[in-house]
Length: 160
Image 1: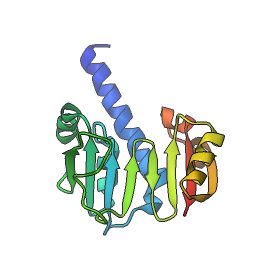
Image 2: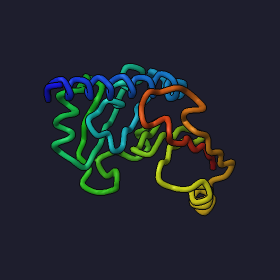
Image 3: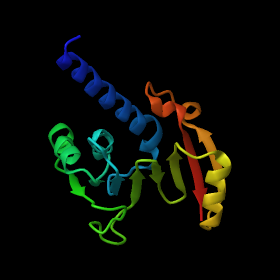
Image 4: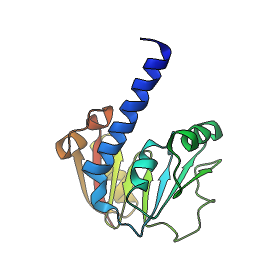
């Protein structure tokens, strides 16, 4: 395959898998009046998929170059791509977001987060130390079939 064909195939894989993630797993949490924060949005494939179902998406990342690609590849009138220079959300006003997606997961009302690099005991302990309870850890693959590496990860549900 030529370099262009490889890039096209990777683009299509990302586009499809993020649409599947949105439709099969996340869509049940989305409402047309929501503002969603995509923290660590990368090239914006998931931000774009979510944007079809909500009023606004604030998509933030630390890389200006990645955000330039995101805007070109996955721009939409209701997506605002923002640079955040640190692990904070100073660019986002307090109480202005209904749902948060970060690179490790989703939070909403009763919070659900996908975390990839901790053991179940570590996740449970961290959440309990932070005051959360009712911790449940479920493999993403058991919830929906997505042809992507995300199926090997876990969805963590918890609430305060």
